[in-house]
Image 1: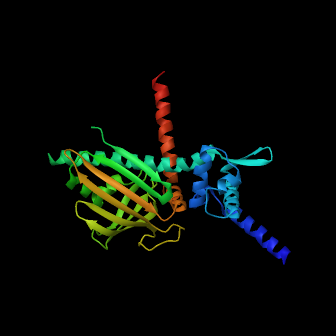
Image 2: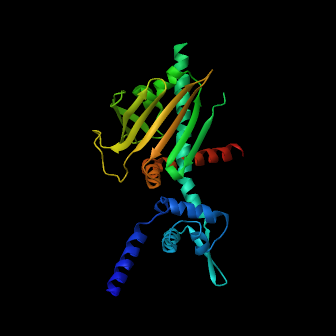
Length: 123
Length: 170
């Protein structure tokens, strides 16, 4: 029985690991909150868990997912492990958004020209 | 004329907020956002262009359009269904990807809701666009799926300009 549970969990981890990407990682509100929290300073899992009304196991799961997405760096200090954000990875998200911003910007510049042409034709 | 452009993203609600001023009166700007013959002139992110197949601007109606590639291939069909229209004030669309007949296609992407609001000023009209996606993952998919090629093309344009500047500065 124990062995079976173990095997199932391993399979689950493997499956989730394969389809996990950075955007899925931050689609969860708790994980976003964790990122906000440790963006200011590196924290231990216990210190992070204190901020949430949920179990320590649940926080561990979220930290594992964030780590698998390469969003977290682990820093051992003495007997404790501190988690901190990998800033470079967070920037990847902004790159996508920045592209969309540029598309909108250019699109509106085209509209400026169209509006200008229509107004001139009327005169 | 200095025209305001503001773009913010609220990742928590998977929403994009865009505010833009245009140097034209409300009637004209409203027409530019709601009439196919004007939309086709500016909606396509270069080098792509937008071509309307159907436009029925009324509540319950829809706008079906495609992106045409530089090689003249209809690359992607999009559907905007008009959910609510307040004439010369605002309209809300439900946006999704479809086939050429407006039937939904399975992209893993569901839909987004876009509200366009218009405000007349002295010499300018202000348009506010709020685009809400079902999830942050879909926000990413939307940007990656529809516009990634465009991002690359734009990078190339920038490179062209950069090279031109280098040559002329010599």
